Each structure stands twice: as structure tokens, then as C-alpha cells.
Image 1 (cartoon, rainbow, N blue to C red):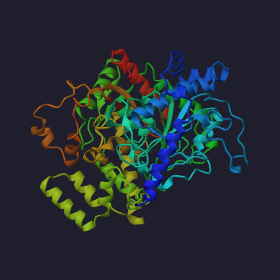
Image 2: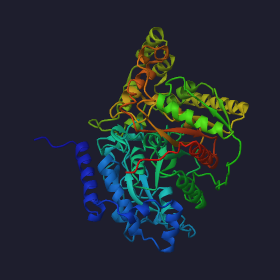
Image 3: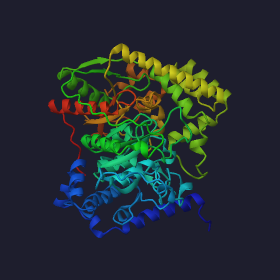
Image 4: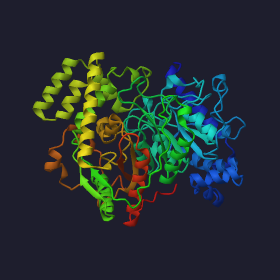
Length: 573
């Protein structure tokens, strides 16, 4: 008999460890929620803190309610990378320091601003004593020796860190799937994905297994799961939210930096969490944080100017996603806001720069930790093949693409995605800054307060179809990582198999024929009947360090939709 490879051995060991953690939970966690449990789950973040601090709601009562949802969510979606519920009940809960480096210069005692709040942690954020796998099997049995800044802040604020959530290997892709933990499915329909790379957190939040998820975002990794799973997420500008101690997909990449950012199942909870984290002075925990306190903003009753980007020039929004954007446009217009069509600088140009910067190392940062028998997201397998292809071959293919299809976007990707020299990378940074300046000028010229787009052209995609949809489909989101703008996602509606269906002759239409290969590939998986009932959202964009304003803008949209009788009501799980 052949012995298992180190990869399969570590995958088996990690999955067995997770199962042991589940089996060790009190039997009551496998039972259905009682009326008392549901009352706990219905409490807002502020109410949880108030009652826990007052002693009228115990940690064990909170963990029993959320623990039941954690167990059922794992059974339904496979969203957990590690279970810390038992440890959360101990005298030394997750995040508590054992090393001397946290006690040499202790911070002043902080108010327990998040006392009793269950917070799930994406498995790329260090928690001392626990693995940070980032979806790679080579990182099994290598517990972190110190905790990330946000984990230490949460510990001092009294939050309950009860689980770690799944990611794809290297945090890149459209689906959360790995050999290490398996595939995480969408809680609304198990045949579809939960998004990536914070897909485990998105699925858990939608299943009511957490109040807050701490995730990361380099190209939509918080916003895509929010859109696919019907929850709320906001990518901050880099340096606003503590990110030291989180593993990025491309270590050392600063030209398109990863933002550590939270998600929530309620918008009010997301805003309240942001306020309270800022009150904890995260710059005292994280040297990369800008010392920028929370700045209260109230946009209620103010007339705002919203610019809508209807298409990115690569993949037009599907009928379901376009309808969500139309609903928001109509609702805001009825409230008296100025809603205008906004034509920004070429999105394809911005993405071209961004993708080249991300993979300027030839993909070494992402692919080096991958073991030879470890499966990757098909999207990443395709990028790896493209990066490894000789440049003369790619240039030849680009020439053929231009001549035969006229698809400039794909042709440009073919010939430009390769390892860069230091001088080439610096030239790209210059091009990125020039692109940012063009956006600034266009925004100013239009006098906008916010920009609205779809988060993605499609609702949640069917499992195993990421290769057809391609990573370029994340362009509506990745664009704002390149620009470093604050951007949030608000759930709006659900796919309707009748109103959101494509015309029967769509594949023969001029619209379809004018699409490039990337757009046609994405549309090949769109099926309104199969996707019926999946959530769809919109993306709200502000400028750098406008997190407070974006959260308020999300609230304005939610209120406007409710006044139109179109309030989003998530399904109960």
C-alpha cells in the first residue's frame, strides 16, 4: 500500500481535527434553537453588549444560541475552518496572549465595547495558538505565535471569537473551495457558491452563526460573498482598519494592497462595529493604521448626487443584477436625489494595470506554497498556466485574438500578464497613479457624492463554473482596490426566474454577439430559473477614507428601498 502524500495526510488531519472539535461540543448545540435562543439571535450588536455587560445575558447563553447556528451552518454549507467555541468558554479564550511580546508594553485598560459579541475570523488572520492555513495544506500544524492586531483589539474589547472560517488556497478565486476543507456552498442553494475568498464568513453570517465576520479584500473578497449570500460588507481604504497579522494573498504586494475589513448580517451592526473598533484606537495596536478617529456623519434628509456605472465594458450585468441597480436608482430618485449616468475612465485600463501589478512576481507569492498534488480554484489554475506560458506564444495568441474576434480586453491580458522587472513594475505604479488622477478628475467634474455599480455581473455562480466566469468578472469590485476607495455591498433583492430570465433568442442578439470572450463565458452560466431565490446586491462607493459616509449611504439606500416597499428580508436559516 502507498502511504498518503504529505498534502493528503495534512488535509485528513485537519478535517479530523475539525470533526473532533465539533464532536466535543455539548450535545445541546446539535438541537434546534429554542424561543430563548432566537431572542438572543435577534439582539443587535449594541443590545448584546449592553445586556452582557450588565450581567443579564451570560457568555454561555450567547454561545449556546450562536453555537447551534454554527453547527447547523457547518452541516449545511461547510463554512468552518476551526471551532473555538469550547475555548471561548475557558478562562483563557482565543486571542489571549501567552507570549511576553504582548505584555512588555501593555496598553491602557480599554472599555469592553464589544462585550459578548460573537465574531468569526477568516482563516488568514493570526490567532495565537491556532493554525492560519490560508487554505494551504502546508500550513497545517503551524500555530501562530502571536495574534493579529484586530484579534488583540477584539480580545481587549470583550468580543467572543468562536470560529475560524474557510478560504480558498491563497485567497484568490470566485469560489471558496480547497482540498483542505472542501467546498463551502451557498446557504440559499447548495448547488451554488458562497463567493470568495471570505466565502466561509459569508455563508456563516447568512446562516446567523455570527454577528460579525473579520475578513480581507483585495479584489472583492469581502464584497463578493456579501453579494452572493445576502449580507453586508464594506472594504475600507488601506490603513483604516487594523490589518497587521493577516496573511495577504501576495505577501509584500503594496501596489494593490489587501484591506482587512468586516462583514455583518445587519447594516446597523456593521456600522456599530466600525464605530466601536475606532473607539478602541486601532492605531495603538497596529503600526500600519492611520490615526483617524470615527467621524460621525448623518446623510438622512440630504439631497445627494449618485453616479451609476451601468457596465464595465467587459461583462454587462445580468438581468437580475441590473434590476437590483435599477431598483436602487428608482428608489433614490423618488426620494429627490440626483441620480445620473456616470462614465468613468476605462475600467478595462484600470484592471489591466491592477492585474499586472498583482502578478508582477509571476505568481510566486500565490503558487509557491501549493503542493504538487494540491488542487486550486480553476480560475487560479488558468492564471498559473497563462503566467507560465512563453511570452512569444502569448503575443502570438493575442495577435490571433485581435484579428479573429477583436476582443482587445482578452488580447491585452494575454500579452501583458507576465513577470515584470523592477523598472516595469515601477512604470505600472506610475500608470496606476495617473489612472487614479483621471478618476479623481472625472468624479470632481460630475460633482458626485457616491458611485453605484453592481458588485458582480452575476448572482452566485454554480459550483465548478469559476473557470468560465473568470477572475476578470471581479472587475466591478477590484477596480476600487486599485483606486483604494471605500466600497460596500447592500443586499437588495432575489433572483426571479420570470422577470430576470434572458430573452429566448439572446444568444443570437446583437448584444451577445458584441460581447468579448470573457463576457460570453460569464453569461454561459447565467440561468435565472436555476438561480431563482439567490440574493443580489448593489455596490456603494465613496472615496478614500470615507468609510463613515459609505456606511451612511448604504443606510440611505436601504431606507429608500423600504419606502418603496422593496425592503430586503433575508431568509431565516
